[in-house]
Amino acid sequence: MAVLKVAKLGNPVLRQVAEKVNLNELKDPKGELQNFIDDMIDTMREEGGVGLAAPQVNRSIQVVVLEYENNERYPGEPPIPVTVLVNPVLSEFNDEKVLGWESCLSLVDFRGLVPRFTSLMLNAYDRQGNKIEKRASGFEAVVLQHEIDHLNGKVFLDRMEDLTQLSYQEEFEEFWLKKDPAP
Ligand SMILES: [Zn+2]
Image (tube, rainbow, N blue to C red; front, side):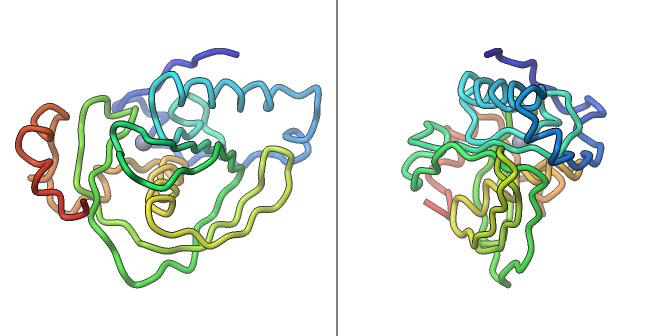
């Protein structure tokens, strides 16, 4: 159990394409990947994130963790149980995009209005190496797109279409909160 240091924007690790995880190493009970995944979950919880990608803790491999329950930055969304995704791939995006305010542990205090697909297909492995295949929509689909972007060297700023909709948290609460198009 350990809380890992979070890489911030400017750290080149956030701009690299992460390497696929070897599933035999993942399944090895003596391997260190299981400890690393536990540390990622601890770090996500300690930092108050709803998701964390391995490059955000300085390791360029394709692992993502998610968990959501009444996070103060995203009030009122349906809960997501703690989830570990290894080598995740998104596909079959629907045509519709929705704008929503996002934040990122690697961008500290920024919030930005980001267009995301509202429905997609997720293919991945869990931490035991079992296949996951599911359709995701709504908030979960947004979180998946945000986190899996990190595995491809992208941050939410890259997805924004209008940088005038980028704000610090304090100014977001003062000037933008009531104008949120996706309440
Ligand atoms: Zn992020």
